[in-house]
Length: 347
Image (cartoon, rainbow, N blue to C red; front, side):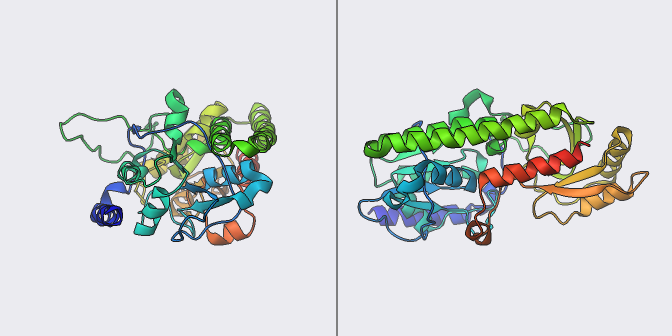
């Protein structure tokens, strides 16, 4: 009976694929227990839970990597699954029957909790493991989660109204791009893993503590970089998922679109506004996110007076490929690389 219900759920989800193309919805009230973290070996998504191993399923890469850091040398005790692998983007991901089954039997399931995870509530209702601990990262962060905002010059999408004609608040899902948020979430994940595997709890606690120190050091480097910067504003010729990061360090920003926008072409008004801001502020860099074709950034550049700005990319960690994983890619490395880009942009 459970298998039939799971397959039925996935068929329904497939019909609704268009509903989850965006991000930033109101925070959901999914069941959450505040604890978790985990593994180094990426489990094949369709496989059954290995007997006597703790199964942890993560939707996106940041929490997957945090889990790896927390479990450390105990990785053989775990089956760790990353659902959004091989470059799948958070905003376009749709779970398969195998994904739902893997979640259903897992011990710990960690997900972001925004609109892109709209399918999770039904998936959790199908759970076959009564002791499953689900971590909704946006719920863990609570009031620190930010509503999306439209800043001056930004190209807004048509507002979608709720069924009863009232607008619902929309929240920025990209919570992992704050090192301060990351520290809160790593602690929560560690606590959950300790609760599931009490025998090795001290090891997980020590691993989390060592990793938190690395996050603290990088956080301090960001603070120092911004404090010593010549300018305090960045311009993105792209979507802007870095709201949490710039707010952490009191930077200003201008961008073509909000972080979860589905738009790919900027209007002439948006291009010229951003170009004027580059000129007014004397910026030497126009930023984009990873995998951008740079078309909007190039158009901004060609509309500036000097037309000599660098176009650099920051990694929002919204999609990670298998090649990245095989090459030792980590959350900490991505955020360190982002800092180096930011240093150039703020000169």
